[in-house]
Length: 181
Image 1 (cartoon, helix red, strand yellow):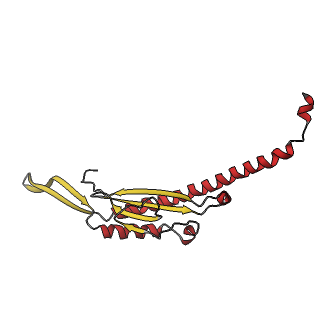
Image 2 (tube, rainbow, N blue to C red; image 1 turned 60 degrees about the horizontal axis):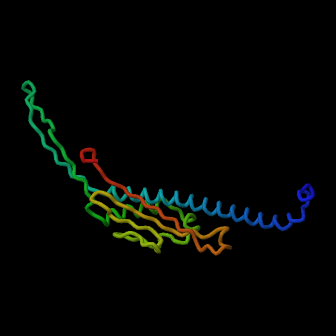
């Protein structure tokens, strides 16, 4: 038994295999870490542009007042108030969202991805095979944006990986202090 433990002849075959497995794991960790960082940046873009689109909503406040006699002094007091919040111009919302989306990016950021803002879609969401940015009025007072890109493969390109798809979405909703939140 002691003789088998001291025999080192098989190590020459096991070492290259273990090294290849270790390097593959490191490559996977680096590529997935990069994808996670890009997803964070894209989430910022989606959230900021969705809030910009929702911020174009118009607020119509309707208030009722009552005239109160306070010891001979007339005072106007608000008895009820209601605010109606509504995105009335989808093109304006889209333009605001797109402007903020571009403001949150830089040219060198997009150099590392395959799907850029080549598609700028208004009024519908991205399909599964599209990359780019999409903005849509998703409710009376809400605006939703999506981003989908394909990252260029890094270390895993030698395994035949064509790209890693990264998808994010964000929804912003407008409200007034006098409206139902």
